[in-house]
Image 1 (tube, rainbow, N blue to C red):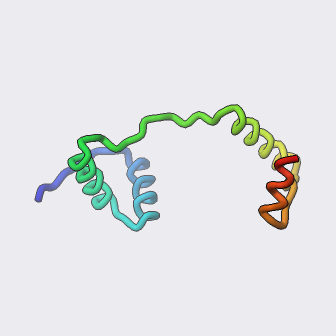
Image 2 (image 1 turned 180 degrees about the vertical axis):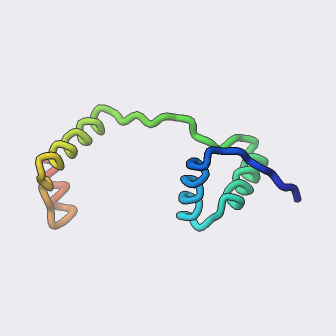
Image 3 (image 1 turned 90 degrees about the horizontal axis):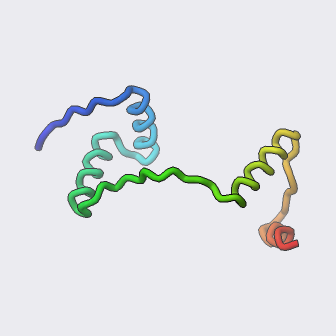
Length: 89
């Protein structure tokens, strides 16, 4: 067994602790799991991509923001079927 010391920004650590605790882990367990996965897969399991919503998603986001800004809640439906029927029309 070995011990490591990691230097990081305190706000990053605090945010990481919240995420780990949400899933029922502590940072040490998450770090060990990361290393085990790297050893098992011979990869670094990190996603450095930056999600960019497509045009349809951007339009939907803008529409929702407009509804909220206007104080409205938008349409409501009493069943999934009614929602799908409305979406088709």
